[in-house]
Image (cartoon, rainbow, N blue to C red):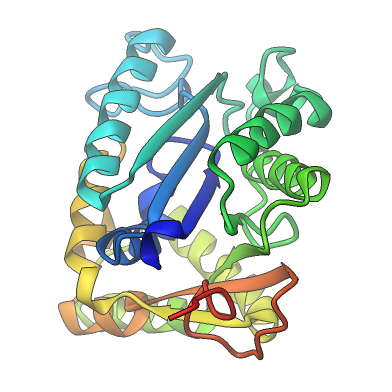
Length: 279
């Protein structure tokens, strides 16, 4: 039964697979489900070694891309991903950066062309379940929004997946994290604090849309290890300072919004494959 099930996750950058879907990728791969990871960009605008930012001396886009793709392969291995597909588009950078105006930036590639490539992979692997971002969610990175819209277009055009899910976060979980860090006396930089507070408020507004929550506590360490495999991007992060009990409480489940479904499985769900298992 499990051998016939396939999950496809469509992400924007190397490291996104671990942070938002590392738990379900590890959980379902452990069950024998085929897990397919599609990463749209090479992450050229990530940090270079030493935390060097794009535009600073010492930041080489292609060297950063090679490093991040190597980290992606390691992360995918930790999560037990069956098939890794990289589309090779150029990272667009953060929303406030001018780089996103480049014609080769992923967010400027027409949806139809990207959707056709993702659709070809859907036709090849025939996943029953596809997971991507919420294009109306609190995190409006241009590459995340574009990846989501392209993936959703591919799902609609092929008609193959039985279920489409959008990743979601709970504002209440972010509150637990921020409160625990403050209680522990962690000095959170003002920009991180502002981002976290704003994200928590936005997440709270979408929390009611969550239909599906998957318990990932049995694989939480694997998710953390996969995230830490992206060491070039995670240095001195406050994430590593969160008390273990709060990590389990806030990140012990991954949450999703069911955006399309032909199974009629009732919600709320605790399994992305609800309505699809035959034994």
